[in-house]
Length: 311
Figure 1 (cartoon, rainbow, N blue to C red):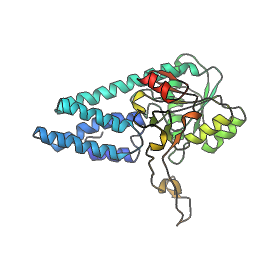
Figure 2 (cartoon, rainbow, N blue to C red):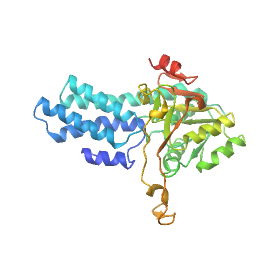
Figure 3 (spheres, helix red, strand yellow):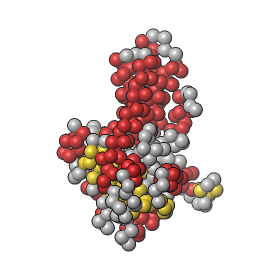
């Protein structure tokens, strides 16, 4: 259990807590923990604590928009009701709402999954990344509940293997047939006609539909377009950053080179060799078939359709 702000920030930075919706929920509770630790005795001290804790949380990871979204929501509540009880109430509301958003995403997208399909997904966008059933995986879970028979290919998702470790675990536990593939196998399997649909989550979606997600998603989208495979992204409305006109403005987190230079605690690259380790890439809206959201399906993916759907 995390009872203080520093361990929470550490958990976010080392990806013990990850997934855009889960980061939003964690940020809500993190605001409560951090403000409580500071023991503000006056309204001015309370406001200062709210600002300081918010800045710490936002700096923890730069790409996922749910984190600053939740912090800003908590700060608005603090301005209206500057009490710890009000902050806790708001954090719990964010938590409950994410559960509902996941359910709606699953319901909106389940009919995309047809009997006999092989669906490919990347990274982890399920129960271990949200407060509910997930985003991309919520679609698969709901399709399963509706009786669809399909199988899933889970990219292992180098370098931290979220697909192999987490997505495969979730799908297997749900009774959904799943096979893990190396990331570089996806395009070849599409070329052989072995993939009928690709669906992933997203950490931030710009106003025009450009979407940041785990590194490798852009490559999948290019391969999907080349082989006429539908490419969908599932995300809650809280993951849309309508203040960003396009994906070039999305900040991309660079992580430690050690994640790439070794495997399972053993160094695999020669000493003295450097590494590049961007955690995310941006998939242009033009490569996406559609978006699955808690407010329904968005297609085509463009600024006008997004605005009409999300308001």
